Length: 226
Image (cartoon, rainbow, N blue to C red; front, side, top):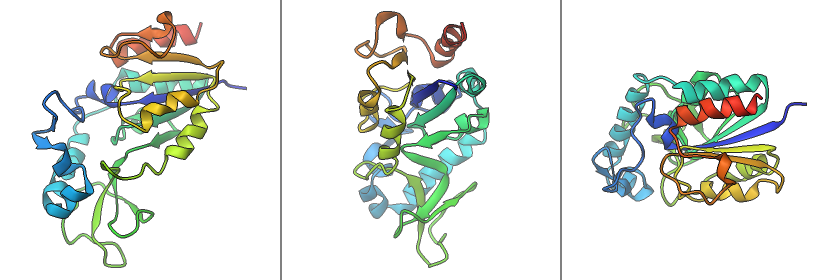
């Protein structure tokens, strides 16, 4: 039986494909205040601004492609039962070929009803005011904003609790509840961390790779397939 390898991925893996990270040093996201474009209050104040912001993100997604880190994770499915829990809202893991991907913070290529978060629709192009579901409700990005519940968290915790190997890649480990997933892994689970900016408080020294996502996954592939 294949070992269960669980991956927690964050903005760092997408950044190498050219997707801007969620937050830069001045607290802005693409020159917008986070609270204006990533909160229910921001959407209530100026829905078209928020819709335009995600329309631009969705368009950018068509211009980027998966990088080597995504591709190695997909390739490793030949050898491991891989489950990816991602904080990213892009579809680069799926486009690289990974088949079990759980999006904690929603997906850019989906929208949902403002009145019913279970009414979710695939959406490739722009979403604007006046775009409605079959019941006449306005559609909004299928993104978990600040102050909203993370509906997939329980499933993610269950997946983490069954891991034989747990890889943290390209995440600040400061966004909760996602960062707390590392506390659900079993005691005998082998933990690897790949990130150029983190300080190690998560695993043994030789399993901590202070590198980019692609460099780290190249090293890790060699180790895992020994």
